Length: 213
Image (cartoon, rainbow, N blue to C red; front, side, top):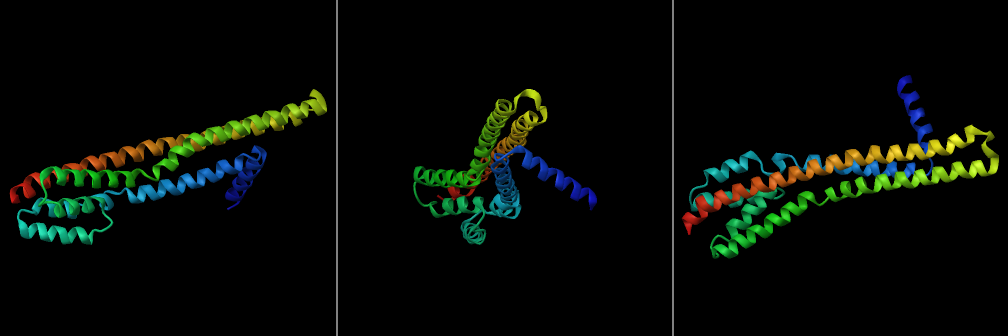
């Protein structure tokens, strides 16, 4: 317990020494963490393309199976793959071009939904170093103002401004680097799901719907 309290106190002192720009950097890190946790939860495979639904798609062979699959897709209302399959089934009696256009539109919409909140991580990964740089500039201004007022005979006062400059730079990079890594990882994961969903839907169209037509 004492170890936690001592480290918490040290963190508070560090934040105070970092100056005013430490607060927006910390706020951005909290927002980034919330977005990352939400996206990790939402981008689980069972939330995007559950195995039970894929098995039903593979088992679907005839009109009765298509009706059953359609009602199952209605049950999986919040699942992207189910929404795309529902569009495919609803447009199965249209000509091939219109059906493919509707499916592609639904796929693009689902891909956009999967990556929409990732923009927050991208923005923070760009803003955090800039906020750190601004804190660096403010810290150096503070240091040079101290030199102008007190001269070079008080190194501790000058060091305070330099410390403020370095702390905000470090804080900005500490926030930006994980945000950038998470952004690319989650974006790649979303794109992989989009490709896999496309393969499932294409197989369903070629194996079942085309046979029915």
